[in-house]
Image (cartoon, rainbow, N blue to C red; front, side, top):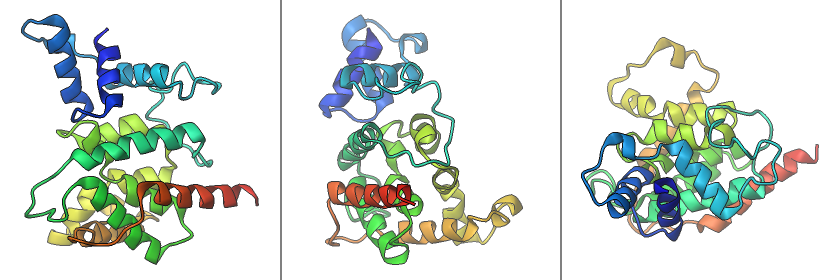
Length: 232
């Protein structure tokens, strides 16, 4: 009941992140002091979102999309349902603003589109990197307290190993830019240079008034790259 109401509130788009929304839904339905056990987890909320929208209902594993969120794939994953799901999450970033001293550009959707544009100038052929540029802060639409773990739990199964790596370790790459210290295992990764580049673009993509593509244009372009690979 609470998970379903949370899903409906999220899809209406008027609330903040998933966790905060679940607390509002629980408070409205229970009308008593909330306990942690009253709140649905992310898997339960996702399951209700998928039921309401019909996303993934025709997939062979439609019964377990949320439970498999920690899986990754090396195959193209940008099906129409995945695209619709990503757009829903990204659009929610338009309501998220961080410290203006660090993010003077405004909301996080605008920031994500700036980072995407910068990534496009570097790797216009690389859908995995461009998707990481676009999705790197999407966890703030899910749980602002723990954005990276939340993002990986919710969208991890729809990402390739490389895109997931770039999102998961971006905070450490940001810190590396300040301290020049990082774990040896990350430095040895074949994706380390891309991780450094994403951290740099994340820092640069914070300009007031920068011209960007729309979200639909960005997603459509990435999908076109994904489709192009399918033809080979």
